[in-house]
Image (cartoon, rainbow, N blue to C red; front, side):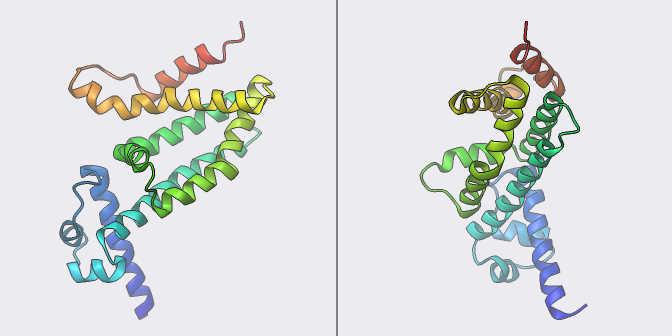
Length: 196
């Protein structure tokens, strides 16, 4: 293995350690020291490859957001009926959110101070992601008005993502059992797309 490969391998090891730590402990608990310990490297190496905790978090968030982008490819498979495609997309998207529950709230909280990966993901959503979702809804419902398609998409997202955001509070504080993702999606689609 040459020197460039070793450097890349070390950087990936640090990033993987950061992703695992974020999944278990959340963003706020990340420190350079903890990531160095988890990746079996040292603080100097983490700083060498990422420059700062903020840069490390930004790259980790970019990896996570790429996972979201991948979920949109389900919507391209026109061999699957539109309702099944949309349901699978929402299921896959929610799975990524459930792996990193703090991510969605962090993106929402960033508000007026977006980080680079958030801006890139926002551009992806406006150029490719949202049109795919809206196109599938249009195919499913026959709706033609862009404003109504946008509203329908936002309603679907809200119905799925709000329970995901609230589940830690509801399950621990309110002792409420959140239905499985499948149950939530089935109920949502049964109520939302019932043509009777």
